[in-house]
Image 1 (cartoon, helix red, strand yellow):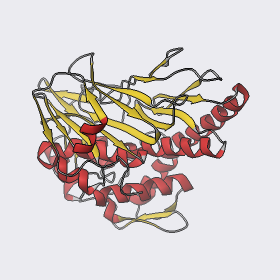
Image 2 (cartoon, helix red, strand yellow):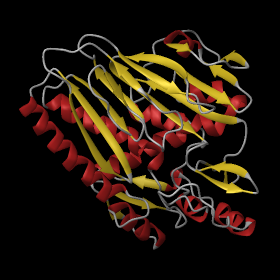
Image 3 (cartoon, one colour):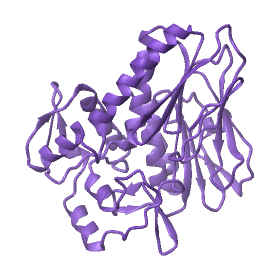
Image 4 (spheres, helix red, strand yellow):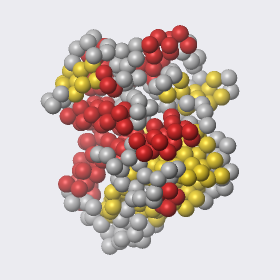
Length: 364
């Protein structure tokens, strides 16, 4: 991920399924202020508009402190509060989690229920078994045995096993639960940054967390213009304009993956069979008024695939979503069709169900 000067903000990340490339706007009275933060093995980029250099420096210092605390609390395979919590759950013991970790788990519970179980951060042991607790891709080590996968599935860990008390104490009735919150952590962090900027009176910004974008306000009075990369090539698949408080989050199977017998298996696991995705869906993109919902939805729609695409989007309260298949078919909800310009050639476009509506997420 990197930023480019003057009129175009280039935002790219190797970990994103669909890379968000550009936010185009006119210069305002104050030049844009930009900063990058290396956390969770990748870069987060923030650009501010309409603020003084001194004010921006203070905001960037606060963002750096926030993100580093998140890394200390949420990391799924390096020493962290989450690792300590997982160890406690494996012993059958509850543990009081830091405030933001408890909040992250509560949002994960919502995602599990709204996705009808397709999004399940309780399967961290399976994610680890497949070798996805790493920042080094592609993975070439041998996959786990079918017997190992079946044994982990048989323990049936789900987010329904997890309880979070009012004081943040987390417990589980199933010792097999191991939490991996990467599927919503970027969205949650983006909303944290948005709240921090709002508290400091900064209304116009774009936040790129690992290649996913949350747009706040405007770019000097104009919408933030963001391109969605086509996983089949270098040209953009589509362009969207964001403003106010809108997130565009993506997932895909072509950046983080392991190779088995010459086939790519995505880092996203299907909790129903314990296997990495290797089917029809190549990439998804979601626009929503809540970055956490957008993050959860982009992963869920990958797992749902074309057959359950429309139903899964409705269950999550997402109006604007697309799914691109490996054979070039593009599935679009009517609201997403109204919000983007498709630039790349596709084999066909298939509408999802539902009327054209705003992209605001229905759930918070």
